[in-house]
Amino acid sequence: MSGARTQILLAAVLFGTTGAAQALGPELDPLAVGASRIVIGGALLALIAVVAAATGRIRLRTGGGPRALLLAGACVAVYQATFFAAVADTGVAVGTVVAIGSGPAFAGLFASIFTGERLERRWAAATALACSGVVLLVMGGGAGGGVSAPGVGLALISGAGYAGYAVASKRMLVAGGAPEAVMAAVFGVGALLMLPLLALVPAGGLVTPGGLTLVLYLGAVPTALAYLLFARGLERTGASETATLTLAEPLTAAALGVIALGERPGLAAAAGAALVMGGLAVLAVRPAKRADGAACGAAAVPRGAPASAGARPLPAVEGRA
Image 1 (spheres, one colour):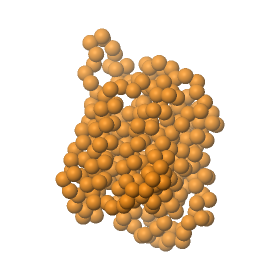
Image 2 (spheres, rainbow, N blue to C red):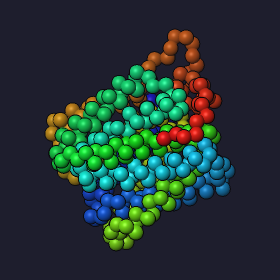
Image 3 (cartoon, rainbow, N blue to C red):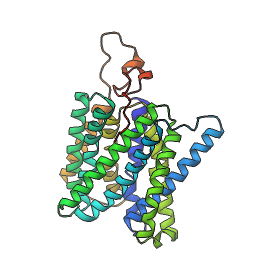
Image 4 (tube, rainbow, N blue to C red):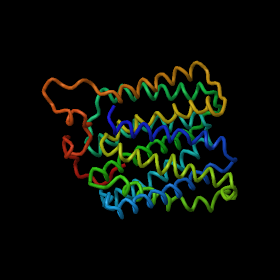
């Protein structure tokens, strides 16, 4: 498995700790928690970027121009806010399945249309396996909730928002942005857009010891650290493949539910976990090197990677989503 894929999978594992942390912490308004984690995560990412620039490790360059930055930051705010709204309207099971399961499909569609990224059969097979597994994993976990058309619509918007964030961030990285600088700028914009939510929802619980511990953890680990790993992996991996690899998130959440929360999912959930792992394995394990004598370095580069890494250059498209 390549280092880039390992970083993306580690990021997905950290993403997957969010639900268990919230379950073990105090009961807080979900929108307040979502807004707070983005604000804290954005501040920490900015600090990391400034320190890295001060020590000469990176240049504070985001790449892609202001439109790409605003688009990526808006997508961060959209997928956070609409996910929580979807879960509140249509239930945890349906909202999670639709939002997380639709993300890779949207990412593949957006990457193909707006960047010319070529979608491989292996990606399609892996995505189909993993998304089917997510459905079984969540439904088999016993989560309830009726199906609501508006809720499903919000979950689809959340999935599209996450995909838009991944594709727009990829554009910024391809244009020469440093991962630390890109994530700091994107989450800074997302934080500014989400700050008004803290004035509109009950947020008093955030200032209690338990509330502060929870949001500090969510901001530092499954946001700042996870998205930094995500960006470093995304820099060398296509946006569509990256979105599929992050389906390790619900698998991690299910495992923590068993280990930390004492949940006992059924056989359907176990089958779903196996499908997700199978889909991830399809992407994580590269096929044998072609017989045409391609160099090892070139063989490991996904088709959607920057031209400097051996792939065809991306077209100059402004309106990525």
